[in-house]
Image (spheres, rainbow, N blue to C red):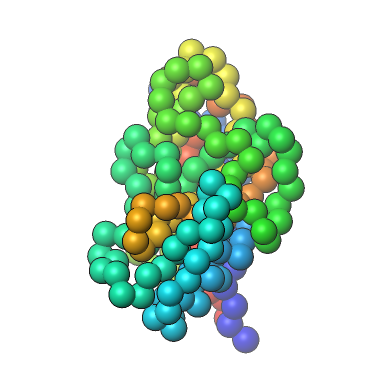
Length: 194
C-alpha cells in the first residue's frame, strides 16, 4: 500500500555559514483540516470555504477563478503571510486537526523578536531510495541583535480569490534558539512510500 508522509528538518547555521545543527528528518504530525479541504476542492473543481489564519470563514478555492498566481506557498523574501512560517508558540497551543494559524507567528524584519524571511524554495518531486520526495524549504536570518526561540513551524497557502491565507501544516517542535546572525532553515519533505 502506498501512503504519503510528511517530515520536517531544521538546520541552523552560524554567522560564518557553517552548519551547527541538523535535526535530521522528523515525522510531521501537522496536517490540519484545511489541507484536505484544499485538495478536495481542487480535485473536484469545487468552491470551498475554510477557516483562514484570522479565524474567519473565507474562500479557500473559487473554482471559477484563474489560479495561475494563487493557491501557492511560493512566498518571496520578506513575505511572512504565506509559505513556510515559524513561531514562538507563546500560548503553547498543541497540534490539533482544527488548528488554523500558528500560535504566535514570528514576523518578518530585523527588529527585536523578528526574523528575516527568505524566499520559499522547492525541489521538484524526485525518487530517493525508492520513495518519491518533494522538498519545500525556507531560511530565516536573525538580524535582531538578540536570541529568538522557535517552537512551531508550518506552511500557509494563499487562497484562490481574495488574498486570504490558510494554514495547511503546523508542527510544535523542540525549542530552537537562534542567536543573532544565525540562520535557521526549515525543510518540509512530502514523501510517498511503497
